[in-house]
Length: 470
Image (cartoon, rainbow, N blue to C red):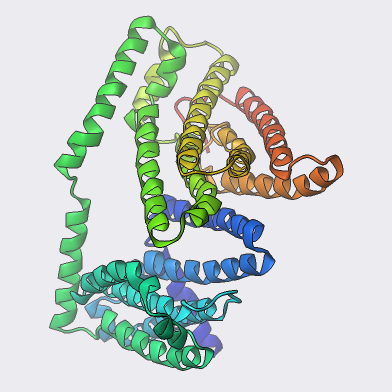
């Protein structure tokens, strides 16, 4: 048994290392942050049991998401036709590990202490359908795309099922009997995802390669609608800053168009459209009062944009290194490292504040248009103030290499949780609203983080070219 567990651990680590490191970090921390925000909203509105059920089911769903997003692409690369013949034990272990992870995640969702489990049976069926479709699609099986399409369309009608059907599928005995059936379906599907060599296996790999190459191609329509206007904006900004010899703006423009504020304006617009679509769909499937209760939590999704912006500005190593060297030597730049880093830090801070203000302003407008009351708007503003320390993410020693943004995001999450927990006793003693106290604590924490970050930058070697020192 110990040898089998060692094999599982080795295969899990080998498969997940194939994922894109920065994208994996974004997904892990982004999903975790979103789960915490929604869990806090659920606990605030519906009580501790609803919050426990949410976190329980969210943890199980995150395990399934990790399997589909990170594990399966790498596992398919490990289970090539040659390895399936030469190392048959590895194929068996991949099948066993996939079945084990899927069954644990499914059992976790089914066993969460829901207050109302009348629709649980239908949702379990939908989750299994999407899970099998995602796995088969990743492996290159033709049935994967069809199952995903069926799952996406069927989700709109799950709550439209007759009450008798929903109650029957969600009966505890029926749920208990359905779990072995789902486990059998998952076992059959996973064995199909990992064939034992042969022509069918080669055909699946070829189909997967064609799909990957198609996804990697840039759509010319998208490039004309989004890319070209932003590049023209960047070119005009660079031309204007060069004519005025504006060293402060040239510092950031030397990082390329990907870190220009226009990219994040476009990202905010895209995320706003997603939030608006979710709000319209939620209003259509539920009542408007329910949407008014959770609308502020949907507005928190726009926080993804400044978080990603901060991580982008934190990682400057290898980004247009030649341009960074030219910017450092430009006559308009300060001569000393202290002055140069101080000016760069203030420029990064202004851009982060602009991104935070834009996301917060758009979120407040969207939630207000959704009919939210003053209390919901206060909660949303409090959440954004609690997240204000993220504007200090880019303030670090940029001359050093190998600095990950995970620690910075973790510190922001810890400060968010600490300020929120500290706000409850302070609000109880002073009689002030809890979110108002939390907002003040978040602003104070952000000021301390900014003071520390600016001092760190001023005491470091010259930031440009970034990442040149080990």
